[in-house]
Amino acid sequence: MSDIAPQMWERLPPADAAAATTAPSLTYWQDARRRLWANKPAMVSIAFIALLILAAIFGPLFSPFTYADQNLRLANIPPAFEAYAVTDGQGGTTRFFLNASNFNLYEVDAEGHVLGLLRGERKDMLKKSQAFIFGDTTLTLDYSRLPARLVAADGTTISPSGWSWNRTYIFGTDQLGRDVLVRQLYGARISLTVAFVATLVNFFIGIFYGGIAGYIGGKPDAIMMRIVEIIATIPLTLYVVLLMVVFDSGLYSIIIAIGSVFWVDMARIVRGQILSLKSQDYVAAARTMGASTTRILTRHLLPNSIGPIIVTLTMLIPSAIFIESFMSFIGLGVTPPLASWGTLTSEAVETMRAYPHQLFFPAAAISLTMFAFNFLGDGLRDALDPRFRR
Image 1: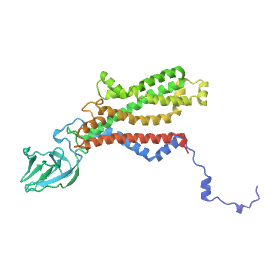
Image 2: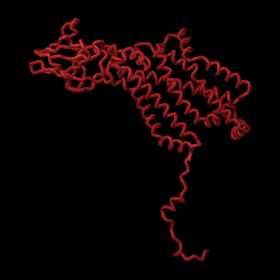
Image 3: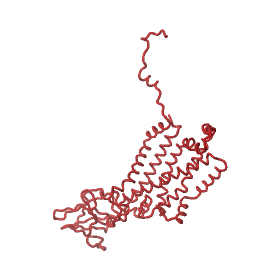
Image 4: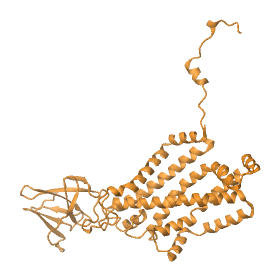
């Protein structure tokens, strides 16, 4: 025993005690999850993707309209408008808004619900005007000079009472009077379906094809990768056009096209990972113990390559969504009356200057979805990279 007196022993200060304490041990996946949660753009992207999936699945169920319902009298209505209020001289008030692009008046209520199209007198094509009668009050729509204006009987210009949101059609309507919001949600279903198909194809074809080629090596590897290179050299657009000669244009043709060629990038990445891992000691030990090729691939090699595989899957999903949107935009995608983000964009381009809201919503959906998956892929790459582990 030491000869030091008991009163000479002292406790460490709290700061020194904390410094002496070691950090808790975390597994690889616990550390990856912690770093992913600390990545704010990735977490916002996960929340956005989850909300998009829920909206695409359940959103159309809460709408009174379907993607094919048409009402030509309510075509090209904007999502927000400047409302007017006019008294009829008998104590009643009519609220309406002027669509300056097609020179129509639409009746609305105080909350902003669209009630219908207001019918006026016969249009005077020479003076470019049209009279509307509200009881004892007569207003004249003058569109001889733009922007169009409403003129009272005494010649004064009527001013709007204020802006109001469209409560009936939140995103407005298209040129056929269809609800843009519902068609947007159906477009999300198609885009997410394509993304889901691309994920399955990459997983079941690309991963195992690349894994087998990388593990077996030799002449089988050379033959398998030459096939991959031949498929990769065919431009996807040309490939889809050739498919249209055999199949009718539509969603199934897009799925077949993506399912046929979209796995080649994943196969190359997995092959490279397997080539770098198959020379490890634990693979040699498993082979010595008599493990089959399937077991070594599925229990040893592929699980150790899961980080790059997940990141690549996440990065390829926005590419698949963009391909579907582009094919639909040029007329090789889904056929009317089905809606996708590509067809909505294609239809809105024709009326972009008059009704920009019809182009804004599908273009914003495509951009935000691609941003979300790219940010999520970046976050997963940083979280699953062992070099960033602390």
